[in-house]
Image (cartoon, rainbow, N blue to C red; front, side, top):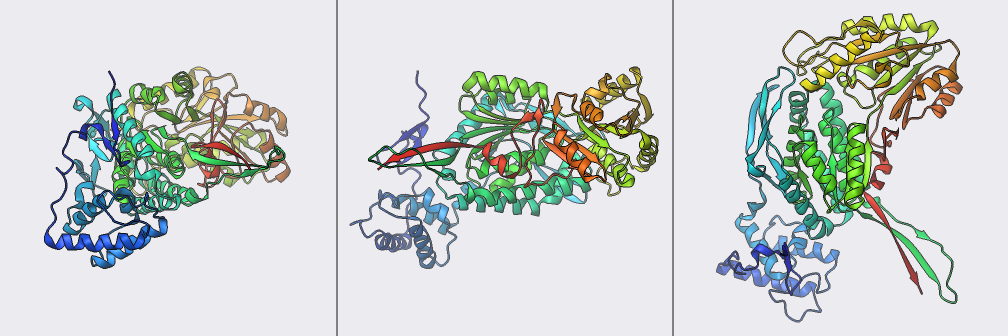
Length: 617
């Protein structure tokens, strides 16, 4: 059996195969006398713009008749003037290239019947944080919110009190296939691949503006679904997401190849050039700690490069991704370019990794799952892969540092975002002469932290993301105590509803201990001391890990800082600061923390392929 999805007609028009036996005119509008007059006026405009066409017929194709981009602008402006300022954009011409289709589109606009593109959304509504939240909860495929196969759903939980927020559609393998097919069609046949790179950037700028207009709502959903402290969500989870889309929107029309001198084939000559092209359909699998920001870091670069995408948000935090999907519709992103599938990693993530039409996977998550994805991508169709995986980032604090700043930034390096931070300092090395003073000051600061509802403006430590993670943190701390580390403070669940865990500090941590080697991904400060002046030994200890995502050093000695930054085996080194990421600075790890970059120009290369073209003349 052969499954035929699309059929190309003799005039070049592509239609779904299921529409082939439908009458051609069944959906065509019957024009009124006034509309027929308008049609003839528009026909005259086409004749003026296309002087080589003797007669403009229904099947006349604007571009096959010799029109260029400047002619698109001229046509749009002439029709606007003719039709009293009807809302018409350049993209409309690309979508309706034949005269008949253009007239049908124009009449629908004049009648106000062009609302078919508006998506009907079944919202979950809640009044939270003095806002009325309207949250989509279904899969987003081909520009439409739809139920999962078999109407399967699951509960997404509020970590502040353990209550159910709503039911969310649970994607199945068949849903992944539908989403990939929609993304592939949008890439190969849709408007996305036809518009200019500059117009693509304009759409991404518009999306960033919409995200900014809805930033309070997005931040509130992030607090509700992920337990993010609202003020932090507003600044970082959502704020940096907006910055990321604006940054990559600016890159859209600056993706360039090069010309290369090669040996001449005398007596002829050669010209070799390279083109940077989009890969095609990309799968993006994002974690639960920064649901919207991790989506933005990968998706913005992916779209700027001209790809289409299927996104799998973390199963426990799907709601900001689905709200983002709604905003892409409002921004005018063409249908099928972005598809979002809440669901399990073992089902949705696995199918994306295995799917033959997916050409790239971008993943942030655990090293264990990252290895499995690499294997699946290799065995399926040798997909391009970028991985941002686990970490155990060392922070070395020398005695000659600014101690007050080191304490402040050391706290941030561990407790930022409740410790659910991929670059969190997993282990602090404190020079012996300041060790006790540093620990004392840290404990004093920990006692000042307010644990509470993430929507309260004075809260600085909210609940852990979900219950399973809370259990892992409890077990992690129990193991640290069992192996002989000193539990200075914390280490327990907070006795209140929800998934709250105390900010925790361990000292006397030896190199062989579990907590010295493994990531907690929570608010657990792991402190070891090192002998005064023994820089090379502490560097050796800091690098004695299979991870290499981030690292840091505090010292007033610039020579020492540069030496340490040279020796640390990590993708990012912070000097006298921490957690200072920026949309323009590449981000990614070494060793088993993965490969490939998010952010900065380097991120674009993860979603591009280079083609070499050689001429002889």
